[in-house]
Length: 476
Image (cartoon, rainbow, N blue to C red; front, side):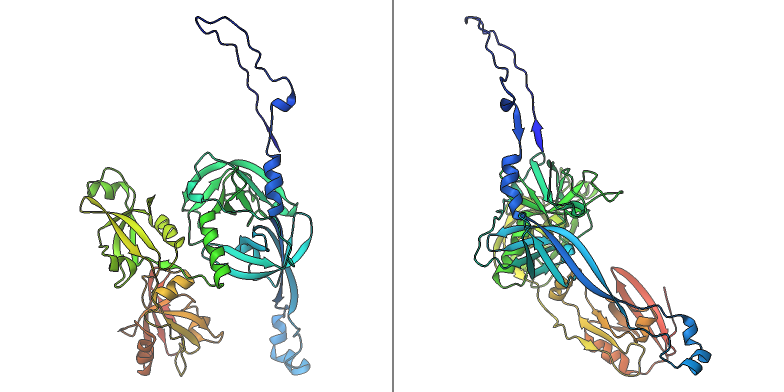
């Protein structure tokens, strides 16, 4: 695609100087033609198409008439049964080569639970890909293809913190599977946090056309460097409406570094939680403008508490990068490494101070202690585990939540079949006993009871239920 720009200039008469008409109009089309072609030629060899295949087993149809005792009497119990059918699911997306030895980044949702991943280069060569690291919380995955020593074209990362609204960008990917496609636009907005497609929401928004199939593709600046990985769109039609979102390159770079180090992702944890300083809160605190994070919870022994952060402090910036809300705070911490020191600018009692904080891992306290509940109880067949900040960070839930989480269950579990418990529920109390650890559940179930009163935390909503020994229950 070419962008044409025309300009018309007039002669200027300078007082006191000899009047002279100067010809400044273009003399040929070559003087007025502007093109992205050189940039596209640099970028596109490093953007790949990704094709995945997954084999899923589907239950075969069985008529309820086959369960009739009369049918079973004449035809046997196995009549009407058939083996589950296998069906192949295929999907497509895009990816970006970020290391010349075949390291590729894409979206986690592009590869999903694929059994086979095929990468097609811009020159149409195809390679089988190996998954090095996946991260659902950022929706980023890192792949590797075997190049046998060949160096491939690769894109370098630019500092996405230096991206500005209005910057020109190109989006490159494989929309709708039609083949590699380049679209142009600008950076429409930064730090978008209400997209709802991942835990670390700090997206770059662009009006460059991004469609299904572009996921995992490149968003590049005018230097040909990667500033983001295209991830999502807002659309009522399923196609581009000029509102696309990309994971910033600084987060992608962090994931790639972890993949190349040991293939594990260990995030730092500040150990502080808070709320956005809204206009109302700013007015009540006598501040001249909203913005920042008002600290209202600190984990004892966490990074923030050790450094002297207090409840009531307002976090204004991390390493001179403004923090406007909790999502921005999470992103700033999430792009740092464990063990590094950050400078946190705070407002405390009307004074602005800077506090150095050394970031630590989230502690696994208490230990996970996964346990399958057994015995003559409605909860038999349910696997539970202690919820610690480390485990909460791993599964993407609030690290400040406490209790015992339902992490797995047998299909025949009475409370699961009845819909009383769901995976991810946090058990807060059982028959009046406060549940802090797995052993508390074991203690509560040792006492024989005709019914059980249970309090659950289901995604932040408190639910009170009663279940009888006959597996009847009601909740409120």
